[in-house]
Length: 285
Image (cartoon, rainbow, N blue to C red; front, side):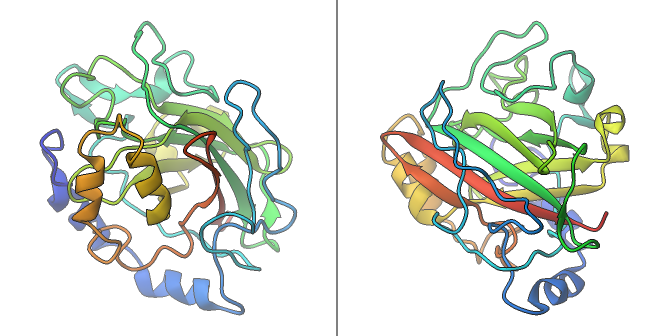
């Protein structure tokens, strides 16, 4: 991941990427009709609700920008990257594990918590993930825990990057509801050199097991349509993100180069009202 705050960089992601079962995953994705992440299966569809605090429509299915499908498939396994904060690596302060901090179970992840006081600024974004079981007619998976994290508008990761190592914003954990959904209130992530804009997440069997990466069932990433990224970065406050984006493509990205059909968010909203991203996440439960 080549970025001045990302010392492990591209080599870390490439080493992990080599272990991916690309052929198997794409065969699963190609079976039957064309598959993609944004139309929920088995009732796991994001609702058309509006957040009172942000004024953002939190949901989106076929009407948004992105790919869609009539069936689900297992989402590809991806690297957690060098900055997961899930207990799998360390910083100068020791093992970095946000999952063990009081207050990590939350929906609004824009501010730091557990004694840290910083907050991330940027374009308002809600992210709705709908978890479904590909082994049971794409039925909704209630009671699972999803840990989500991403970089800030400047491309920095809390807990690790220079200037925000003492913060833990843009990290949160939630349990899926009866429809298999979680919704996070956050900001649109920036674009740093070497990667297309993305959001990381890990799936755990339940809240009790969501204490560290050793217990995760699936690690993956969410992608954004390029047009939406351009709209956001044109509003200002995102530093070099527009220039970085212009130097990248999905074909060049070391995670998304083999396709994004199961990871591309469906988008609604605008640069005036804020955005909402929705993604159906299929796992073999």
